[in-house]
Length: 101
Image 1 (cartoon, one colour):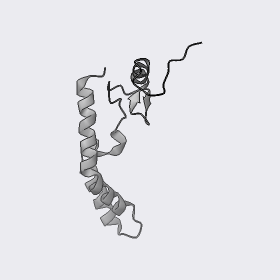
Image 2: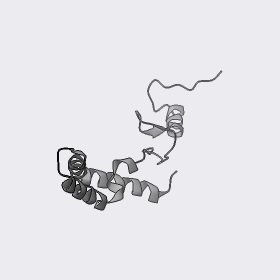
Image 3: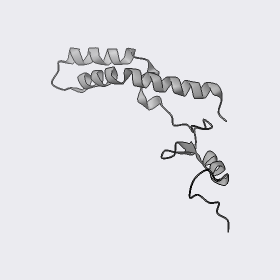
Image 4: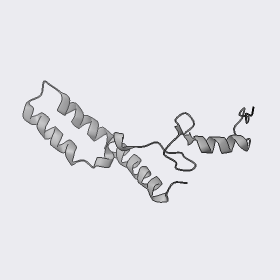
């Protein structure tokens, strides 16, 4: 189980990304537009730099919804391999059977 603080930090980042997504996209569009004057593009870059760092989508990290584990994460199921194995062993995932040979 991951630390509660790490799970809460990740939730905070998700909220910040959602809050600033539109503003960040607008500033990036202005900054990358070659037809605009250089001064306007530079001001957009400065405004972009003043936004919180945790509002950037690249700072998000996938975590298991059951345990908070950051590694061995299945995107389709949104859980880690360990949680998947436990659920499968308990018979809580339809069609999944334990394999042995």
